[in-house]
Image (cartoon, rainbow, N blue to C red; front, side, top):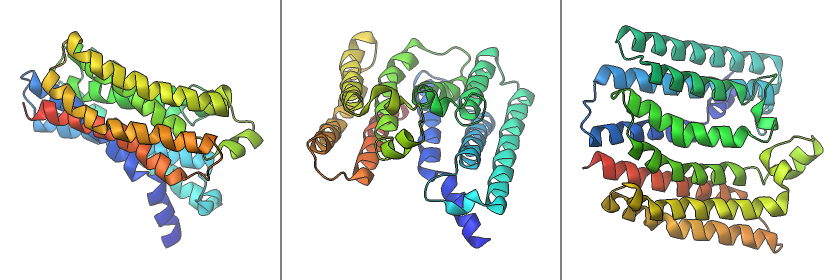
Amino acid sequence: MNEQLRQVGAAARPVWLLAGLSLVLFGLGLARYFGATLEPGRVLTGLGFALGLQLAGHFLYAYFEHLPGLPAVADAAGRRLVLLAGLGALTGAAVSVYGLQLAGALTPGLALTLASLTFIALAYSLPPLRLKESGYGELALAVAFANLAPLLGYLLVDDEPSRLLGTATFGLTFLYLAWLLVRQFEGYARDLKAERRTLLMRLGWANAMQVHNALLLAGYVWLAASPWLGMPLAIVLPTFAALPLAGLQVYLLGQIANGAPPNWRALHLNGLAIAAAVTYLLAFGFWTR
């Protein structure tokens, strides 16, 4: 049982949870930047929804996917425990929505955002949709992370989202999609054997490397152009401190293309570090002004 609990904890994906919650906080910071009042009850309830929905998505993914490296999840007791954890987390998310309704915070815009996040979280791994194997799952997750999560944070405290929110988050979509794409390279042979139609399978190995690099470039081109779209230059400039990480990622992938032994862990961590660093630097700029 202890081993099963440990593996359920791993299936929760703490790093992904932190990334999702950080993006909600990013949206809250932008709303605060525009003068919105942060009501603790609304904020905590919204964060509770985000946490519960992410946990539900992760546990249900583990239940239907049998996560690599978690062999006990494949047995009956382990799968049942993961399923119960997922249903419990989903119930918690639903209770949070009810709490927002009682607080008078559930505006049409917020309700649509919550519904969109719920659809993506469940449709990614649950049949019959299983976006993960459609080739569009990674794009859906990138939109959920980079666009909908900040929008959730913003709408918790302000009914009318600013155009600057879209400007600030659009570039993040490219960076998070690049991270989600690079994570698939390690399992390429396994997915090819299982005939899974992931984004990497649709693109092909060589094309996917080029697309990955283009996504990183597009993210930084958008950041460079964002001051002309209303973003404060003082907030945008610090994000370029993460540019060397993007250069390192392109170099690491290039080495693999040239036949060097891959360091998958470094690729995964660096890919996340690029998106997370830019998110943090933008959020820090909004929260401290």
